[in-house]
Length: 253
Image 1 (tube, rainbow, N blue to C red):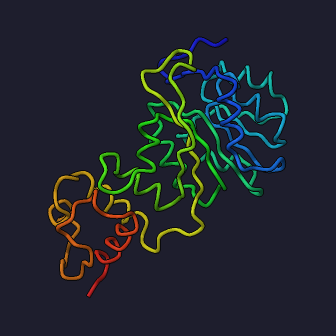
Image 2 (tube, rainbow, N blue to C red):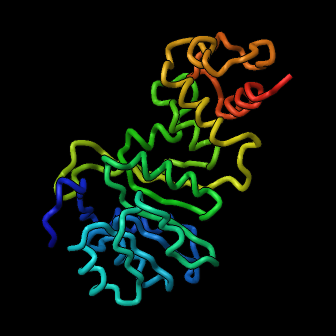
Image 3 (cartoon, one colour):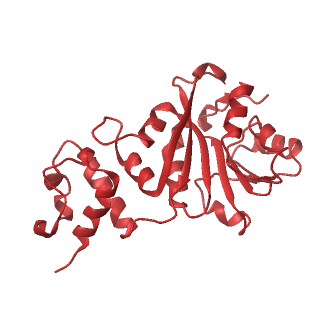
């Protein structure tokens, strides 16, 4: 048994029933490509390995890499961080891809944003993450949890909170509860410059208590062309309204 590294945010899942439920949430077939992020000692991999012929494991901990290579000789182990470089290029170019993993709490958001940016690359992602973050992914406007992550996730995918996971089933026990989510990318992206759209979303929520007229004032060149009510606050807008807002801000005379 590996000693968990605090620097890697490692909390190893020990409940076999929960692990089985996570693996069962994948809508993948035996021939599809499965990418597991951060498998650690392979608790989840134990359930994936017999059922999928094309299994790729992305693991940053060299100790775990040695264990994975021994336990799962027919899987492909990538000794790298999912946040470093373009990990997609190391995987087969063809075939349907599914992503799964128990994400470290301290880098959950960066991984989620990276996965969302690759929305056209995979069919589904199933992650166990901090429950509070999972609730943000599916949050509705006018709620405390609704923010940048909510809007971007819902614009580029259909997120679903599947079930909660108690902190009691981990070693070591974390200070928070977890939840399992499913993310299915949308087939089409918003019809607007994506980089600018993200800028609008981020700028609006950076001052979420202010009216849009103040929060995004630096982005407004002609308020008369803006079709969204600028007296509203960012947390009041539906995700699709941010797309409309970005489009009108980009409209030139």
